[in-house]
Each structure stands twice: as C-alpha cells, then as structure tokens.
Image (cartoon, rainbow, N blue to C red):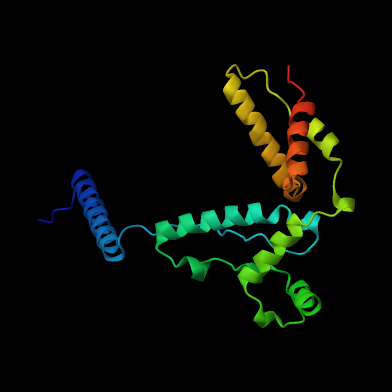
Length: 201
C-alpha cells in the first residue's frame, strides 16, 4: 500500500528545513564575524577642502574647513584602525595642481617636489594674517551688524561670554586677527565690543 505524505506532514518538513537553514546561516555568519573580528564599519567618503585660489578672501575659511576634515579622519581611523597619514589627503594634494605649480615657481622659484605641507601651511597662515587695507570690510559696520547682546539670556555671565565668543567668531571668519594684534588693535577691539553691541529684544 502506497503512503502519500499528508499536507500537515509536508508543512512540518518545510518548517524544519527552513529553521535548519536559518540556524546554518546564523552559524556561518557567526563564524565570519569571529574570523573578521565583527562587522566591518562602512564609512561615507569625506572630501578634503580644496584650494583653488591663494587670495586672502579665498583662504580665510580654509583652515577651519581643513580642521573639520582632519578631525573626522582622526575619528574614523580610531574606529577602523586605519593609518591616518595613509588615508588623509595632504595639504599639497588639496591644491589645484596648476595653481600649486605656478605658485611654487613664481613665489619661491622651486619645483613642487621641493615643497611640503608644513611650508604650505605656513604660507597660507602668512597670507591670512597679512590683511591688506583694500581687502578689509568696514569693521565697525561689520561688528554693528553681526555682534549682538542677547537679552533673552537671563544669566548675565553667560550673556557676556556669548558676546565675546561671537566677537572671536567674527574675527576668525573674516580673517581679521592681524587687525587686533597690536596694543592699538586691542584697544580698538574693546571699543568695538562696547560700541557695536545692539541688544536683541
């Protein structure tokens, strides 16, 4: 007498097969994770800020953007174990190639191969700190527009602290450090802090 499998027995067989397969897959996944030390982190590509002009206006924001990029790369390397120097784009490689070649030839009379990141960073800092009068914004108008004393903050100490932080932010964003380095400049800075404060209702 021939015995045909019932619907219920077939369903149980399918269920057992699926469960065995799932356990097998889990076992394989666990073996792979043990072999490779766990799941591999996936990183979104981070682009280094490029330098396409060496004018004061173009370079003012670059150091801040570069710092953000380097902080992200350091954090990534701490997680992944990668070598920071190997995966981080150098300052030299961040330059437009033709710009760098021309800059090296006209400014230093040297080949690109003779210039390293330290020299480039130093020259960038010199340009940022060498403010020319015709590139300066109207400093008083700038502070009057952007520096405000926030009366919504009930803590007086915090209110004053935030005002000074805003002042430093304005100076940094517009590359005005050289304007306030001398004794006269520091007095001018104090004057701007006092005179340019416009309370926010």
